[in-house]
View 1 (cartoon, helix red, strand yellow):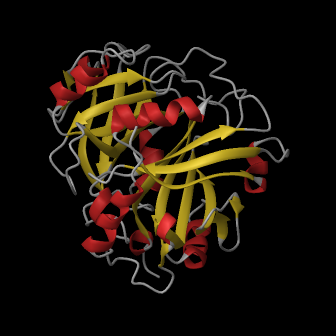
View 2 (spheres, rainbow, N blue to C red):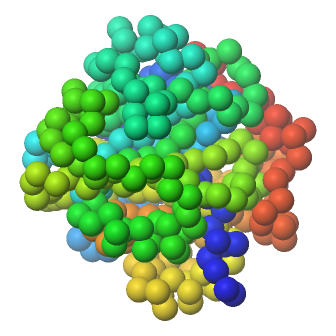
Length: 353
């Protein structure tokens, strides 16, 4: 294998831990249109022992998506302990996942739709002139609606799914050795150092930062590539202070963005390549892991600052679970998208409040 580019198809989902899924899932449907669940189950998570001080936790997890486009979210609630929020005062650029960007069909409509539901900041333009605005969910998780014109379908909701992610790092050049050179987010949209007006309302956001926005120069691969579309990783480096770890003093399952999930194919070959480049797997399900009727092979690596990256090789996913319609993707071409008729069957799983 010459490059991991052929193995890492792109961003699949973001893991977010919350305090009460019974309240948060309906809220995410209202805010983001994330109304299609792939699974919702309660299980022990021994795979995460390395990130929970060796004590196996039990969690409820649900993978949700918006068929209009964008990546999914895996929403998690610890059931064997009561999760906790950030012990420190969060500052923009702290080490870890800082925020998630969501696709907006109409930014003003998104703003008007959510401003009375959650704390909402002003509409601002970023370095690439795309406009957006930030909100906080009830657990303090920071989301940003960003204007976008790439959509797979139209359900009538003002928002689609996950467009990208902002990650705080200590050294962007070191981090790009992973995100750009190994994981294949090889196109630099911009690389700027300044005090940025679009971050002025964020905690410590009026300081100096270096920020780099990365995307893939090649089309998104994988069965769901048509839906996920182009996605972005923004690396954020604080220059006026020493950043703290977002999860300092906390464990996986406490409230916050717990991992970045990437869709991959050929896990064993990928393991050899990444280990040789200094990023060994920290935990590995070894084979297909069942979550309800979904079967995947999951592994984790740490980025240079300890941010968790989950890599997932999908074997079986439900299309319409209540009808017993599933897709075994193990023998498919990993770069070949699923046919439109099959993707659009997912609408029959939509939850309507």
